[in-house]
Length: 476
Image (cartoon, rainbow, N blue to C red; front, top):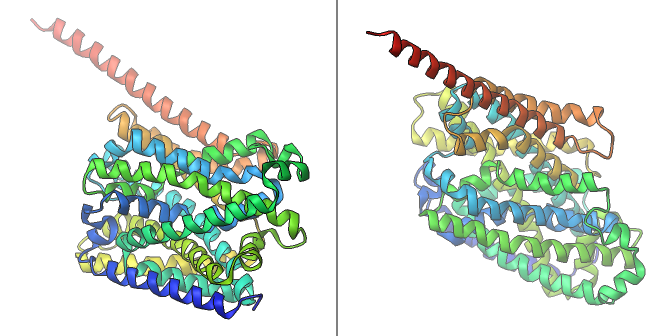
């Protein structure tokens, strides 16, 4: 073990036992697949916020932010800042129409508006985007566990996946929501204390500015305007397109509670990124030779009191495990409602759906192990930016059309946009200059296709009106 003392272990153990008890208690609320998926629509604002924060504030926003800040500085803040902006827009503009759909999943909303063809396509690309975020969470857990226990990356990945499966299989949204509240308190205290120590330990803002040049370290666009703007934009549209966060809003016992939960999330998430950024910069000054992925875990081990450090390490582990588990829950809910219930077993009862949901969680996490084999050392946040962008490129514009322009978009164009958007983004990675994020190409193609669908329906409507007018005049 690397500097992991008895005090660290005791702090970790006490924290994990406490959170486990909360998780066991939360599992008592699961009576049906509806409870598992959307909490039976009984969640208060804190449960809604806990579910959103419990997934967004994971390894990417803590360990991943410190890793990217170690290399580039304040560019790393875009994950948390973009997530906060996305939650604000979710509360102000999207919560009401989403809540009033009375649907459990995004594909169900799209199918209602654009027909059954929208289901499998939206399910596929939405799940693929979420899956990339699960990969990022597992990579974060690998960095944490290898620093704590000095085990191999593969062993750390296996342990991470087992913990994620256990975390959510027995609790669903109630588990992620209730545990999310407890985790939020732990993470916030940990990040604030760590951020203050890092900020003061580096000599305050003046001290950091004396060490690091203003560009790139103190610019939000240190990696280039289009790259970092795309990173923030991908988080905004990703939050507004992702099953897990929409699921949290739908789980509210009322629209007011749902909105309040999203607003709490919008206020709470961005400050975590500032703390993580200063921790990354602090480690760049004092431990410049370590792997960037280890910046946060090493900061905890080498600078914090061991008792408190153990609590922080447990909180980071819970954040990482909870983030991956919540995302896996989102994928499993999509497949259960939109693939299994619609195409595989149309007569499935509630117990069968609940069993399949839990099976899918385990399957998704097991698949993650295979996928990360050759990507252990990659930048964690890059996976999250790509994940959010891929979801947004396929889902965001059609979802907006389904919510705000009902009956105004030709369904064939809408369905085609769900395919052309993500494919354009994936192909654009090899076609566009390196300083231009392919997300913009994906969103542009998605928007243009939906716009053509809107114009098509408008023309059809005018032609139909003209024929009806002419027909009525010809009648005696």
